[in-house]
Structure formats: structure tokens, C-alpha cells
Image (tube, protein in one colour):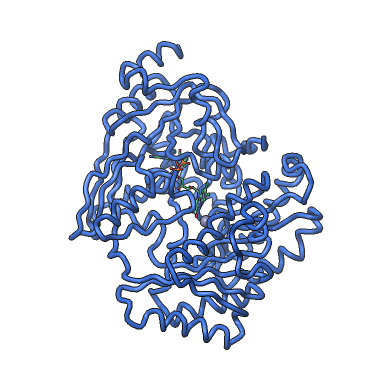
Length: 481
Ligand code: FAD
Ligand code: ZN
């Protein structure tokens, strides 16, 4: 049966666009090295029609499909399970920029376009596509929409959902829905676009999107500020918002331990405040340069005067600004080099963050002595990456096997008790599907299952991801490698 299916697939796409055996390996492992599956094959369609024909073939033969873009997802949703029966649908040959409409401030791109290429295509027209992630050289716009990615500019421009006006989708039965509207107002019934955004490949395959663009700011300032606690960082955020309003485009928090991992794995990069409890990376941008730098520096001056900031550096060149951003972007890479870790991608009301961090600092050592919390993230959005690194010198895989479930429960209970979310921007994937089944309200979870059943009645699109197949028996996450 598998052989006949592969022959049919080759007939649709051509032999070179169907990978089997060892050629599938890079598509079978996730970026973090926590999930490894086995694919029946990898299909590489080149346009929307080919995606639709592959999906129709899979629907006819009952073959599950996992869509894969840059495979940078952090929750194990982009790789097949270990049954060897799933098809990986690699979208990266869908990489045309179909249109840039400077008057409408929109661009229409195919799902496999790498995020950085989308940013560059907008910049070539003097425009800005503001989604920005540390993975932007590899992740795709289809993956960004499928996970409703966040990143570092959400504070000012919103997340992927807010940056998308229309999408084109191949449904689970292989129909093509052309929803590529560039309209900002369109109240004609249920919002199907928003249903597919954030659905992580479980409801349809996104093949193209119409994205919102913005005028490129004329000027941009970056600063690094040293704060001696989370309260001070939150105070700085309040001050920066009130003094800069919409000019504040990024407000990123980096804990001392997170930066010490960067120092260990990238020792050649200078760190202005290695001793500070927290360093905050602030960015402001403005449509005209008039008075903008003065406003930015005056705000920082006040923050120092008010005792919120011990010291601060303002980048004096683009190169210096890149150096500061590099420190922030290197944290996930430094963590990966340090070894397997437990990631918590949490959202909280900003006002609840200092109390949450105090609570964790006091309670975690009793659960796992020597644990190293690596705290960083998008404080301006109330989104922290509260990651836990195994104690120094301990076998990380064994440590995770022993402690991960209890630590997740402890951290997420504290988050939920404060009205937060246990997945702010990375999604649910395979890693958190069992937890979603227990933490989502039964009404909301029931509605999600109804939608899944309606849109993917055969259950072939990324099965068991986001929604466990049987909520009575939550699947346990794949153990760490
Ligand atoms: P993949 O990993 O290939 O897929 C992710 C999910 O989307 C899977 O469930 C997959 O099935 C589905 N999918 C992919 N393409 C499609 C499609 N065309 N149609 C339907 N479903 C599809 N995320 C953030 O939100 N903010 C960050 O700041 C951030 N920083 C990161 C930094 C690093 C160093 C790394 C490695 C990752 C980071 N991420 C971040 C996570 C990741 O980059 C994002 O989730 C990204 O949006 C995934 O895009 P991708 O193309 O790699 O998708
Ligand atoms: Zn993030």
C-alpha cells in the first residue's frame, strides 16, 4: 500500500519532490531535539494546486499529514509521529511574493516564504513587515501564521494574527479556499481566517497570506538598561509607555542567568551589565527623527533619577544596536547549547509578573535543588520564557524524565492562578496537547473538538496535536532524547 501511495505521489509531484528513507531525516527531528518521528515520505509541492492534489490523495488513501515550514517550532508540532505512516508536507517551495501593494499597505506571499525574505521584500519598497523572531532566517510565514507567532515587536504591531488580513487555505478534503483579501473591514459572516491562524496545521494547510505592512520608521533607538529587580523593570515599562506611547516598539527582559549562558557560549560578545539582576532591551522608533532621540534619552534619564534603572547604554550606531539585539536573540541558542531544558512560554498580566517570579524563586528549589531558571522574554506583552535548565553537571535527559511533569504542573498552576496562559506564543503542538485537554474550559475544549470534526472529519491533519485524539486518555509527551 505504501509503495502504491508513493508512486501516486511521484506521479503528482515528480520523483525529485518526494523524499524517502534517510533523506527524510532532517524533517523527522524538531529544532530542540526533543521529538523524533519517522515519516512515510516528505512531499515538496511547488504551488497551491499541487498542495491540493497531495491533500486529496492523502484523503483518499487515509494518510495523515503534518505540514512543515522551517521546522523551528518549539512544541513538537512540525514533525511526524514514530509510526512511519505520516506524510510530511514541506511548504518551502511555495516561496513567491505574489504582490506588494504600497497604497493598500499589503503584500501577498506564499506560505513557504522565509520570514526574513518577507521582511526584505517589504523593505525593498520602503515598507515594514514588523514580525520579528530570533528564528526569522529559517521560519516561514505559513508556520508563523499556523502558530500565531509573537516575537519582539508585538507591543507595537501585534502578533502574526494581527498582521494578517487574508489567507489561502487547502482544506482537509483538498479544496482551495481563496481568502486572500486585503480588506481591513469585512464583516461578512464567521471569520474563517482567524480559525486557521493558530491552528498548527490541524484544520487546513495555509498556502498563502495577505499581510499588513507599515511605513518604515525614519529612526530607531535601542538601549540596554540595568534593573535590580522585576518590580523596577515593570516600573520602567510603565514610564516608557507613558513617555513614548506608540513609539515604544520593544521591551525585552533578560535575567542574569539567561545572560550568563550567553556569556558562556558566546564569550566574544561584550555584555554591558553582566551583574544586573535584569537587563531590559528597549527599542523606540518614530516616523520623523525630530525630537525622538531627546524623548528617548529623557525617559531613560528619568528612569535613572527615579531609581528604576541603575545604568543604561543607548546604542550610537546601527552596529551597536545589532550587538544589543544579538544578546537577546542568542538566549535560546545558548540554552540549546547548554543542553535539554524545560520551556515555559507563559503569559501573565504584567502587574502579576514580579509576584510570580518571587513565588517561583522561593518554591522551586524545594522541588528540584540546583535547578537553574532562565528568565527572559517579552515583558511588554506580559510574555515570559520561564525556562528551567537542569542543575550544572547533571544528566539533563534523566533530570527532565524525573522532574518535568511536576515542574510543569507547579509553574503552570501558579500561572493559571494569576489569570495567565500556559502557551503565550509557541502553541500547543504535541508537547502541550495533554495539558490543553485538562486546563482548557470544558466548553471551549468541546467547541474546539466540534470544529476539528467539522473541518477535518477523517482526522488526518496533524492528528493528536493541539487536540489529543481521546481526551479521556491524554497522551504523554514524547520523552526527551
Ligand atoms: P514549523 O516549525 O515548520 O511548524 C510549526 C507548526 O505550524 C506545526 O504544527 C506545523 O504543522 C504548522 N505549519 C507549518 N506551516 C504550515 C502551513 N503552511 N499550514 C498549516 N500549518 C503549518 N516563536 C514565537 O512566537 N516568538 C519568538 O520570539 C520565537 N523565537 C524563536 C527563536 C528560536 C531560536 C527558535 C528556534 C524558535 C522561535 N520561535 C518563536 C518558534 C518558531 O520559530 C515559531 O513557532 C515559528 O512561527 C514557526 O515557523 P516554522 O515555519 O518554522 O513552522
Ligand atoms: Zn518569544
